[in-house]
Structure formats: C-alpha cells, structure tokens
Image (cartoon, rainbow, N blue to C red; front, side):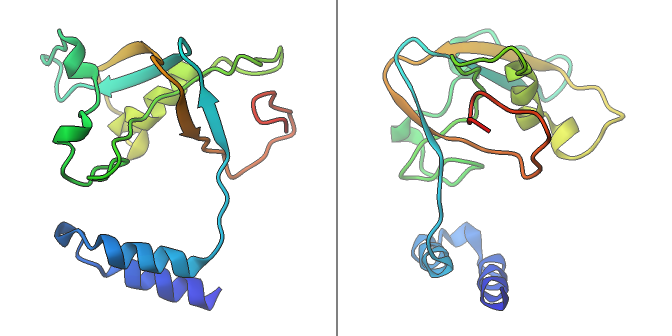
Length: 159
C-alpha cells in the first residue's frame, strides 16, 4: 500500500498544464493490473445526458450546444477526454432492466453534470437541460460501479 501512496503522491505533484502524458502513463503502469467492466451499446441504444447552465438566462437552442467536442477539435485535457480520445458522460438504462431495478438514468446524468451535487452544495438552484441521444454505431463504455454494495441485486451487472 505504501508504494501506491508514493505513486499517487508523485501524480499529485505533476504540473498537468504541461500535459505530462508520458509521466502519468508511467506512474499508472507502476500501479499494476487493473480491471474494467466494458459494456457495448449497439446502434439505436438510448443515452441520457445532462448539461448544466451557467446561469438562469442561458439557453441551449442547437444540437451542437449539447454535443461533445469533435475529435479534430479536442486538443486539451478535460474531465474525461484527452487529446487522443474524445469521451462524454452519459447514463443508460440496460435492456435487461429488472423489476427491482430503479429507473435512474436521468438522475444519474444529473449527479454527474450538476455542480450542486458534485460539490455538495445541496442548498442551491441549478438549471439543467437533458438530452436523449441514440448510438449511431457501437460504443464501448466503461461501467462505473458504486463502492458500496447494498443488499439488493442489480440485473445490469448481475450482482
């Protein structure tokens, strides 16, 4: 565990404005093997997205205002994207939706996009626009699982 803390400490001291991609990759490789659950969305699959407004007067009137940055214009690091890989946040309901599952795709998108929830500002107002996307081709997703497992099963991950 001490080795991990040393690596995380080195990562935290990097000047990320200089885009030290090689150094970050080297440190992450030192951590060792990791696992991801990949889920593939097929063409036509719905994706729920949310975008917070900067203020009450801001309006989104075009599709491009709710879209992600196209790869050719993606030259900086962002929350999920890197210059080599455009990503976006979204939420889905699996087709294997079970009777005990909670329909929370819109809520999940809100928690990810909202400054109110991300920053624990539970006494605030925030305007959010929702959009429903449809996959045009197969998309591979990394599934984010909660750290705490409750006592109910989830048909999405087979728990």
